[in-house]
Length: 501
Image (tube, rainbow, N blue to C red; front, side, top):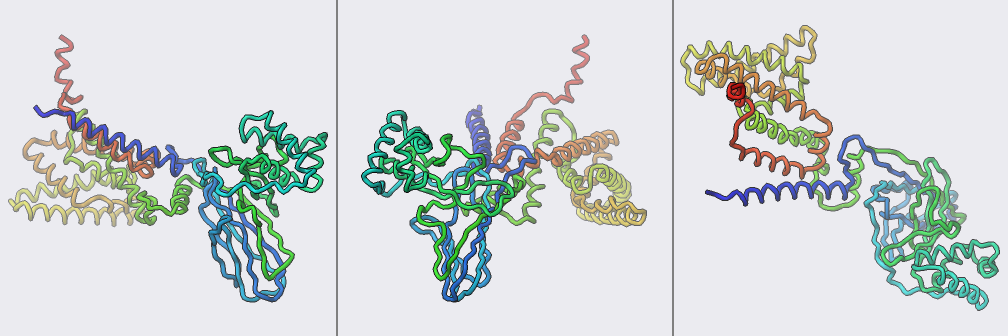
């Protein structure tokens, strides 16, 4: 007897791989498990204004990148007459505008789109450069050492140490803090104290994300290396948080804007928030990743629409296997109900059922006449196919003439499949009688309706289209059902008299 252990191992492997693919896709691209969810996108526009001197102009703006909680999905520049290039410098990403000659007031724009993405992470590499000296005078150095010593005593790690320093420089009664803030702002003072304590840190430019905000300027804050990643701190907020979400725009700690050939420069930011569907968010993130992606979403829209129906066919096959093997429902043909259900999706259910009954019923009448001619099988099938085409054509024209536009969709029925169905039912009628034809025809219609209900279910459509790994789970289910050799549910009625006795 052949062992079934390899079979069950293969089934379990299919289920595990299918679940793993689906979970990875959910976590990597934030594809939701249920339809109808939305994702938030921030459109941020930087407006750069300056006065050109009539010579060559070069403007270089610090450009943001994907970071914790936000994925950069799109960026563009609007600058008539200027050349635009994106540069990856040692200090970070920058966008440059260049022109041979410009004169008078100039305005250029840079626009970026960020997807709110909890799974987005930037490079959390530790600092490579040595910690720079604090550049404090002797008097400021003494005051800074006192503040550092007190904060070090009251802290346990870099995070709590930074919070203690922020409390100290915001204490109006601290003479040491007042001395430091006499010549420096709070951001510079905090950075100097962290450098004095040899804590890796850097000054970054951030913007607050507030829907509808206009003409916002960049705020300077300090990022501190915690040992695992970079944590953002506001020198004026001891809690380390902000009323609005924060986006790091400038990580260079060099300059927000470099301008050559112009003066009176100014950078202002405007932003709006909007919601998009989860499918759009997934497509946008995959495009932004720039990686080889085997998702259906990477195909053109026309092919995506086709696959949206194709990916539902395995669900229909699972239903047919269940009804035939476990329930014992008889159908005309193995998977003919699935193809009829696909036609129902195009025609709508009521129109599809009426069309199916009319075509098959009329076809059986004509086929009964052909059987008297004693034609060969090939000629008889060809005649049935032509007859089905003529029936569909006549019904479509009649429906159009009497104003039933729903009848025009009857052309979506698979003509070859219907022809073979009529042929099988006709032979079955001759061999088994009309009762068996009604059983198999009715079983086929019931199965097609159940498959149609599954194929039009939004939840199942969403899962099969967005999580291709579920097809492996469906395959595993069909394989398991294929090993069942017990009684069908419809066969249990034979034992009903025994139960009464």
